[in-house]
Structure formats: C-alpha cells, structure tokens
Amino acid sequence: MQNAFAAQTLTWSELSSQPLPATVERIAYGKDALQFGELRLPKGKGPFPVVVVVHGGCWLNSFDYEHITRLSQAFADEGIAAWTLEYRRLGDAGGGWPGTFLDVAAGADHLRALAKKYPLDLKRVVALGHSAGGHLALWLASREGLQKTSALYAKSPLKLAGAVPLAGISDLKTYSDGPPDSCNSAVEKLMGGPPSEVAQRYAEASPIQRLPLRLPAHLIHGDLDAIVPLKQSEDFVRAAQNENVQLTTVEGAGHFELVSVQSATWRTVLAAVKELTR
Image: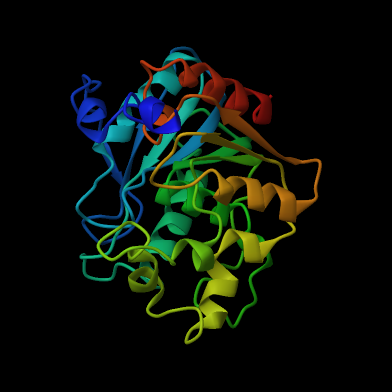
C-alpha cells in the first residue's frame, strides 16, 4: 500500500515546474562567486524575525538555491524575513569539507552586517533547510560548542532561536550507507572519507553526534520520503531526549512536499517557524 501512495508524492520535476517568485538582489557574504544570499523582506517597518533558508540537493553543485526561493518568498509574505543562502558544494572549487560548512556558517553570521542596514530582529533567527540543507541547518544549531582546534570553529557564531530541518539528514554516518550514485553516496565525498577514516570530522559535522542541542529544534518529515528516510529524524529526536526537540511526521508526504508552498505541508512548516520566532 505504501508504494501505491509513494507513486503519488510530489516529484522533483513537478516542484521545479512551479512558478518562481520575482528575483531580488544578490548580497555577497564572502569573496567567492557562490558566497551570496538573497534577502526577502516583508512589507512594513519591522524589525522582522528572520529565517535562514538553506537549500538541499545532496550537497552537489547540480542543484542550486533557486527552487527554494518559492518558500523564501512565502515566508516574507507572512511577515518573516528570509535570508536564502547559496554556498560552495561538491563539484565547486572549495566545496565539501570544510568549505561547504564554512560558507553556510559565514552566511548565517552575515546577518549581523545586514541588520545594520535592514530591519532585522537578530534575537528571532531560525535556521531552516531541506534535505542536505536540513543537515546544514541542524548543524548551524549545534556549532556553538565546536572546539577551537576544529576546522569549522568560529569565534562567536550568531545565536539562533531554533532550527527547522525539513526531511533533514541528521546522521551522516548511517546515511552514508546507501547505493552508489545516490544522495547517500555523496556523504563520504562531502566529508573527505568514510567515518572509519575521518571520525573526528563526523563528530564535528553530523548533528546527531553534536547532541545535546542548546536550543529548540522542530523537525518535519514526510512518512513516504524515499530519499531521506523518516528514521533519520526519528532517531535524532530519540537520541536528543530533550523536550525542546520535536518531530512532526506528515502523513502521505514524500520528500519534496516539504518545500512546496502549493502543498498542505506549507502551513505546518510556517507554524513551526512562527512558533520558534514568537
């Protein structure tokens, strides 16, 4: 029965065919051409809560940020400023370990500079990401405790109000165990090796190994997700053993409904972000 339902879930092709919002200015947060973001502001004076939006795509440069701008604009329409990040990925010079992580971190921290020009409330910033972007958003929520010896260390990371991973990859070690030429197989390329060879990197970059979190997280996952299994989020919440970490399972949803504003799941995503930025 599940296979019959899975055939009806939203596909990447269907998501990609949905209309895109109007383009906005690209704002650099670094010197590389891929180190930029787009800031979408609500109407009004602010100051506005902010959602840092991190796109997925198996950490590969085959997928860029464009598809998730639909979600970003929807947040802005609901009164939440959206800072959508692009970053170096596998296939880009400097992508992978540690560049991908450093880019997302620098992009999030750049909100301090943006707040000097735009009406942003830095006390109400939530990191949100989808799939591999969900991994990076959850990692952003965990990076404060990194040691100074880590390649991912930043002196004073921007303090977040919470994280909302959508079909997020929370355990790099278990997710890396998958078929060749799949999203699973990108993990070892991202990390520069398997867990047995670069265990410290996994300890610093895999959210489940970064527990306990020091802030709230609301994970959202479709029960019919064939790309990132629901078990990734279930195991994370179980390991967290923390009332500030919760999971909403969306029945009948696959992988891409979670970033479609045309899906009923959008209201669930919006409610989670509003709760954490209240």
